[in-house]
Image (cartoon, rainbow, N blue to C red; front, side):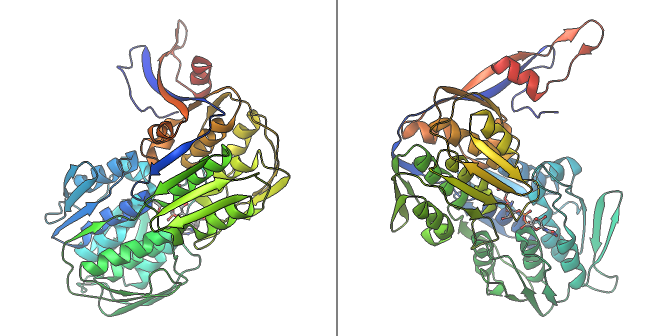
Length: 460
Ligand code: EPZ
């Protein structure tokens, strides 16, 4: 069933939105980059480690942030938001059970297991389950919590972790992850800050969002070294204080807009960015024919003729899996044939069929796509199946001939703050249109549920 972003009374009409893109416009000017979603979410979860208030600045306005706020409030965290600032106080935690509905809506919420267990000695959190891009198991999170001395059980789809009876705190340990997992590194890093003694995390993920988390935890009084490398060392402390922290800029949003410039053969600049966070992306954009100039916390891209390059995704500092779909959209009109291989998530190629509906020529062989560039795509109705696939649809539509109509904005709004406004500001012809859909009632079956197809028919 397709989730709805604004629901009129389900009598017989439903209001939805789609994006309408009239392609082939050149872009020019500067785009402001928002705070990083994948950092803000875990920084908010870290509030569970202290009784004192956390003040976070540069928080993006995204539906995922709203869900994390709702989840934290549901267990007693007091939250105040004012534009892109948020204060969180977890003094009076009411419970250690996290509600299924919210955990299911936001996989990232599983990282709350670490700080809650470390702070109050127990946590009960539903298994987040897989999603459209992969099975996304969490055994590395559980292995880490068990290594810190917790007893963990899974009953009826709920993970229950607690300290052994006679223990007041988790105990530091040497943990080697079987895979470089961003979420597992974050969960165990947070739990270890309040554990007894030293914890060493080997084969940790090295993403900038983990560095941002460690920087904030250290300003709360934690003792963390090596974040951003494969080995992180944490000396447990008695308690953590509150702090003020500004979220780093979103490197994935920045990468998406750099590709928007390349795909429309336009020169634009972005600010603020942290250039080193984008090295792998700059490398591929330069390889395929773009000039990239960085000046302090700004970057300017000037594309020339775009030629095909091969890309393989991998954990940071490799090419980010979150930019695989947007980069594939670029390769659909590049000169020559490119190969894109996805190694991080096993089901992250759903955008291929939609891009082929626009006239691109992509063959899929397992987790590798072979893309033969075509002169231009043609606008059509598109349905996005996940967050980054939805961004790829927008980018492809910007360069296409004619009009595209994109549904699935629930996904887009999870990770991109007012994307169409930012693109409009630099000259894109794009708008968010309301569509009112009558859920057709026929005599025999009553209301027929809405599906991407029925919405597609309405949009077409
Ligand atoms: C984070 O997800 C990001 N989400 C993802 O961004 C991003 O794609 C991913 O890292 C990789 O960079 C947030 O930060 C909220 P992982 P996470 O654990 O932590 C396997 C977006 O578009 N694995 O690093 O869930 C897993 O199945 C989102 O913004 C295990 O096998 O990713 C995957 O194949 C999508 N066992 C790989 O590791 C485990 O216990 C990487 O997953 C944990 C993970």
